Amino acid sequence: MNIIVEKQPNCLATLRVEVPSDTVKTERAKIVSGYAAQARIPGFRPGKAPKNVIEKKFQTAITEELDDRLVRQAYDEALRKEALKVLNFGIPQNLAHNADGSLSFHATLTLAPDVALPEYKGIPVKAPSAEATDEEVETQLKGLQERFADYQDIEGRAAQNGDLAVIDFTSTLEGKPLEEALGKPAGYLSGREGFWIKLDENSFLPGFAAQVEGLSAGESKDIALTIPEDFPLSDLRGKEVVFHVTVKGLKQAVLPELDDEFAAKVTGGKTLDELKELAKQQIGIEKRRQIDDYKVNQIVEHFNSLVDFELPEDLLRHETQGQADALVERSVKSGMTQEELMAQQGEIFATAGDQARTNLKTNFILQEIARTEGISVSDQELVNHLAMIAQSRKQNPKKFIKELQRTGRIPGIRNSMLVGKAIDFVLEHATVEETADEPTPNE
Image (cartoon, rainbow, N blue to C red; front, side, top):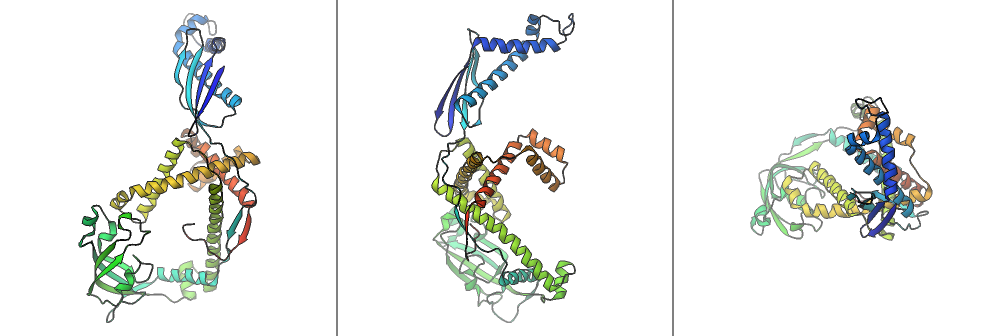
């Protein structure tokens, strides 16, 4: 075969193929012989029909099988000769049977990027201790108490820090209703009725709760706040919004006593000491998970700061859309409205694009580490993993695996497992320094 590969930017390559006439003739003869051995033609015994009869009756099917076979052979030969790492061979274009009996076509290939690996053993990472502190245990138990709290009306005094205020509010920007001034939806910032807010620094917007303190039920106040620079709605950042607030009522949480009776209620019979031990174990498990993620993110940041390469545009578009969909789903679950999402569409896609680029770069780096270190995922490991997923979903493993095969999702799952093994390898060989700093949520 005459095979020419022309590499293009953005991990693309043009494959040009010409299959000589003698190769075409030989492959066609093999296919015709296969049909002749099995075909049942009226007037002829099985396997005895003349080949010209076979070719006439099954001409279309024979040609389709011939084209498919020769294209696959060309792809295989291109992989061997050119040492290509092909992600997608694309669809053959301008496939033609020429007058001299040869076959020719071209295809646009998507290639894996060429990755020059940095040193990946001994990467320095920092990690705090996974041991639960007494303060963390107390905080978790306090959270349990709050879940089972009773809320009582407060009468005869003004709002104080820690109270729950039930408020109605509207908002204005430069004297106009917020959404009118913006020219688009502003979500919950535009106003709410019967809105519960805990009066502490972390509620609503910085400085809001402090200005509600001192108000009694039935009292109103205009609260002017400058919107922070990190606020999701970029059009409001740095601008002063006035909230017209009326306090409808005040409530306080009455916590249950932290004793054996309470512990038995929330655990189904355990003592307070046993509840504390459970809390300590759960905190340790969660901290270890967070620390593992913290370490991985440091590895990802390390690699992405040292290595850069082109990425396949199709993959980047697909991954960006996937990240955007995930961001939207999380935002909806957190309570954002459709109007708020539409207002932030540009920012969502910008964030998704950055994350997609990081994800793909990391994926290719880790795949290259796996290749270099001879790391692989065996068929048995893959089957066991899929069986565990099926079991967790209460599905029949065989049916579950068949459905994954039908939808072409098996290679992606195998790749995820391979990348996971490569991450484990890098972490195993990392240089870990214990630090007192705790990982923050965005890390």
